[in-house]
Image: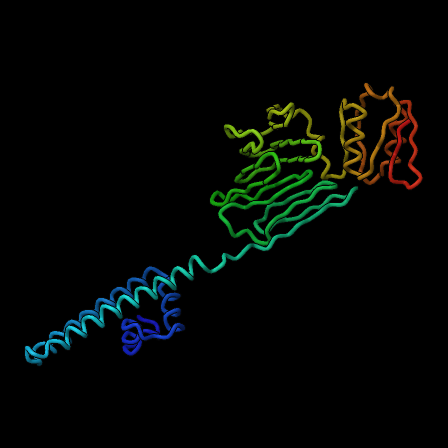
Length: 319
């Protein structure tokens, strides 16, 4: 059944090339809506051409030989009209599909302040935890073939499964592609650090710094950027990923490296002036909510040092 615009009068004005721009655009939109509509347009065009040829034949039979110029003029006019109609349809189709700007998906950006963490659920059902001093950019609604987000800092992803739309975490060093899985990503652009730890499912890493074969991780494996290379290792301690519970867990870590972690979490420079701590290693757990001053006081029980803040309270000195 044809839509309302397909009346006998409309056939004439459209196929003869005398339709208005609004009418022509309405036809193009209708044709683009489905293959069935396109078939209807072609069928009606053929029917229109048959009627025109029949009219031309009738005209030939009624006119004397000396008046054959009229059908010839009609045929030439029809050729022009058909060409105009095809040109208009093609032009409008190109405009509708190519020239019209593609809608850009609205983006959200979340920035987690020092000493805090955030938990959000994306439009596809994926759950994300963001650590302190981290930021993630993501679309309000996923509309593309791939579900892309970009990350700076540290995040834990529990990705909703969707085989037709892979989930991709984009970072400066590496892109991480998944279908449905749980993994932790840590990115520090200033210190050129990157790590991805897979807890469930599978992930595919694409190295953007040193292009090469894609890296596939299995559960309880992690990939870390070390000495300008991506190194694969096993996950031996899950405490490192308990930060989403508000915990800072560390095991046999150098004191200086632990202070770097505190700098990131609490967004405050920590300057170590005590050289005796260079080779000191420590292990333990603490709550982010306890604050840096309380944690340093606890560490003083097992290491010989003191600490003070600068006059403006913006720097901590370890003495």
